[in-house]
Amino acid sequence: MPHNRRSFDRAKNRFKKTWARVQDGLGRNIVVYLDPVASECPNCYYDKVNRVSSGICKKSPGDPTYFAVGRCPVCRGKGVLTSVRRRCIKGIVIWNPSGSAMNSLTHTDAGFEGATRVEIKTDPCNLELVRDSQYVIIDGIQCKLSNPPILRGIGEQQILIAQFFTVDKPKTDSGEII
Ligand SMILES: [Zn+2]
Image (tube, rainbow, N blue to C red; front, side, top):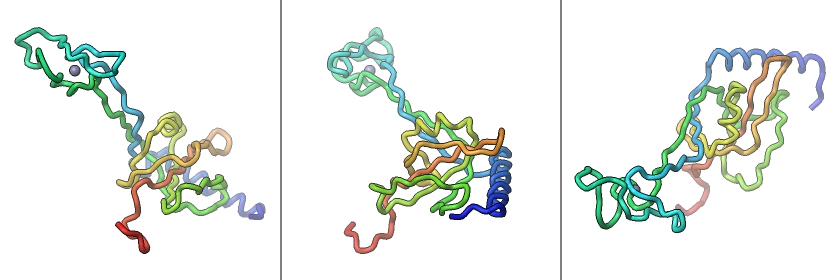
């Protein structure tokens, strides 16, 4: 794509507008899911060798979660409790982004066949969250990061741009047996 002065100015103006919208917190909610955190069960001792509950209760008889035999009722014998970590961020969402002056990312389309691409523009403070995400929910659809997120900007103003692809299978398929 040839870069003349006018298209550069247009791109610059477009960037300024986008930046202002990101800064104003406009845009949609994007739910970022991080790796779940595991913590030792408070009710039983953990068997580090077999990575399961030892089956020995930490509590005393009479405690509501006390058990003498069988499976720990708190962790169901796993020995650990996992908690889902998620954060909500604001971002501008662009489904099926097309190549524009501000969007010259290299796409790694291999392996994403049938998936839809989606781009978000958000505050650079979300960099680590986006980079470490297991997956995100955009407009109710599960998506995974396709490229490492990048920072784009003019001078001091920076925007975080991240591209995802949909994980959910498209509902209407041509000739695919369901
Ligand atoms: Zn337990």
